[in-house]
Image (cartoon, rainbow, N blue to C red; front, side):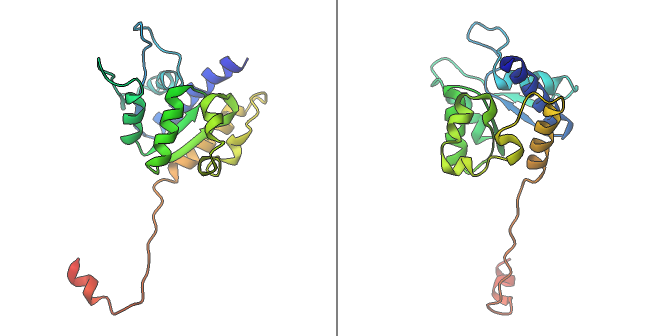
Amino acid sequence: SLRKNFAMACRAIGKTLAEGGHRLLVAHRYDKKGRPATSAEALALEGFQGTGSRNFEEILQHAGDPELKPHTEAVERSDAVILVGGKEGTYAAGLSALLRRKMIIAIPAFGGSARDLCGIDEINRTVIDDLRNIDTFPSDWVSTLTKAIAREVASYPRILIIHGRGDDGSTLQKKI
């Protein structure tokens, strides 16, 4: 079922990030009643912690905070944002990531806001081909998913070095 595959994908993403030595920021680990959430980030955290890694941080929501504050704060403090399924929080995180020029890895196959956000050209252009229409029926689909994410995250940061030819460099050398 799609829900079972969603949970499997999120846990596998968390495991892949932990194995890659990444830090995970989580906006909602528990639901409003204090029970473990079934959100993408909570499921990813399960996979992440399953490796023994404790390199994660929960972004807390305090009384009186705006509803989407944890999502936007997590985006602000991150280098990359992975969008899987979701509703309002995912949509807000995706827009926030776009505005802040963060790396966005969208997985539209599970629907929700992740797919809706792919309707925005700037996000749609960043969708990795392996993830655009991932088929969750072949036995190796989780491997395809996690390898694509690992490749993309490993490619960050992207660095541009500009080599100028204006003068002998003495002006720049003095400033440095």
